[in-house]
Length: 189
Image 1 (cartoon, rainbow, N blue to C red):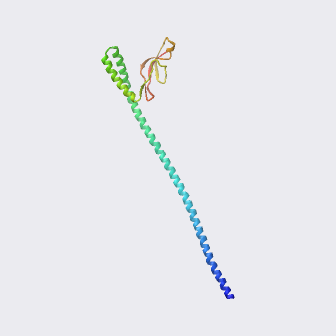
Image 2 (cartoon, helix red, strand yellow; image 1 turned 180 degrees about the vertical axis):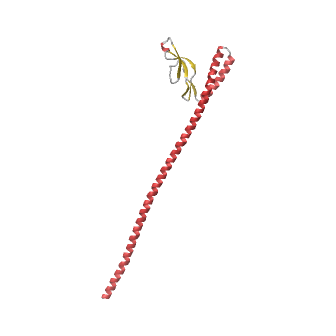
C-alpha cells in the first residue's frame, strides 16, 4: 500500500502542479491585460486631450478668420465712403457757384438763364442727395456750434432774434449725418 499511496501522492503533486501553472499563467495574462488596458486608457485620454486642443485651435482660427473678414469689409466700406466724401467735397464749390449765379440772374431778370441754372443746380443737388448729402438749415435757426461757424455778429433790435442765425454767408452740408462743411453764418447778438 505504501507504493499505492506514494503513487497517489505523486499523482496529487503532479495534478497540483499543472493547476498552479494554469493559475500562474492566467494571473500573468490578467496582469498583462490590465497593463494593456491601463496603457490603452492612458492613450485614449491623451488622444481626447489632443482632439480637444485641435478643436479649440480650429475654433480660434475660424474666429480669427471671421474677424479678419469683417475688418476687411469694414475697411473697404470706409475707403469707399472716404473716396465718395472727397468727391462730394470737391463738388461743393460748384454748388456755391450755382447758388451765386441763380441769385445774380434773378436780379438781372433773365428768366431763361435762371431756369437753366436752376435745372442744373436741382439735378446736381438731387443726385448728391441720393449719395447722402444734406443742406444744413441755418437761417433763423438757433446758433449751434455743431453745425454752424460764426463769421460775424450783428446787433439785432428784437430780443427773440438774439442767438439766432441772421444770415448765411456759405451753405453748410452733412454727408450721411457727418458735417463735411460747417455753415458760415452771421449771428444776431
